[in-house]
Image 1 (cartoon, rainbow, N blue to C red):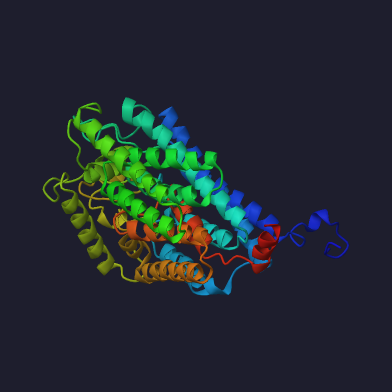
Image 2 (cartoon, rainbow, N blue to C red):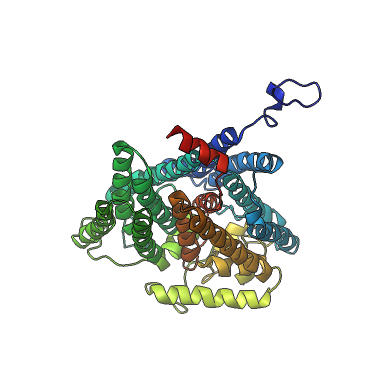
Length: 480
């Protein structure tokens, strides 16, 4: 007999009577909705050409609220494994410290909602934590497989749009990285080529895992096509993260294939990473794309001129006297060094969530400070930037060193639990999700969080710590 609260009906007590399988099904679709909504809402400004970039935050908000509800249900049903106590506590501490940082910030509204167009304020952090808890409450392999499919669909959506951007230069804010140079960089619906590179790198790993884990030839064919397409488009982000992420994904794929003791013919999928990536370089060198005839990295011009300065007006333009914008190493060195200086002056609470540019502003120009929008002010300050492309430094600078330490502890805790669960159960889906999380953790050294990538990262992180219920496993065995 179904349980009831007082004299209420069974229908109104669906939470009380919800099974692990039913919850896991709902949770997996909630996670897919969150991952896809940021891309779908970003499509509006990309396709229309109207600068409504804050819509991506609306997508995250809708999905985040769904995951908050699911996380609360998972907690009520006691689906949260005790093993994740340390990473969950670290995430909780990081949220509390973000509130303290917000109170001491330059602009409380920006601290809550995030910088216009970036959207990674306190609310986004709360949603990321909810995504992680929701994924960690999943109790069936079928639900985790659904999450993988969601990541692949998101990657395919971004890649198809990326192909249009690459070969036509249309519906893109990144066709040019200077007034004279057209490179037709791909950004998909991920807001920036840098963020697309992170999305596609993890998506390649998901596709490599799906090739081994999925049943049925049609599913495997989709995975092979995805691997080739993701690798090809990733090279057109012209970024260090795109190259490093593609290489890491290939390595992760090899690990999954050998760990699963899959047929060695699956190793041919590595060619699906290498060949399309090489083809992309050849196409650029043939002068087919934009007005360039040699492949090179454009990290500095993309993240600084095309993204923060031109697209969002969230920073000033780069200063040639301070940094060689065409030297990728010099760009990252300059940004990281200057971020280190900001951290040293704001050790405990940082500048406030998503407010890195505020401390760098040195003039308001002709616009009165009291009446100015921050976007109008920021772009007047040459040499400023709004993101450190190292998430660990970015967290320390904006929310204080305690938050950065908590962030590191949460990721290390998640990886330890994930690899421990794999070692104990030899579950290949757990290995795939843990490797995706590890990739994200490594890529955070040369890129930063975004509303396009973070939902994928935290969904994979949550799925990696899942310890499948023995009853569910036994039920599967009995069916066989």
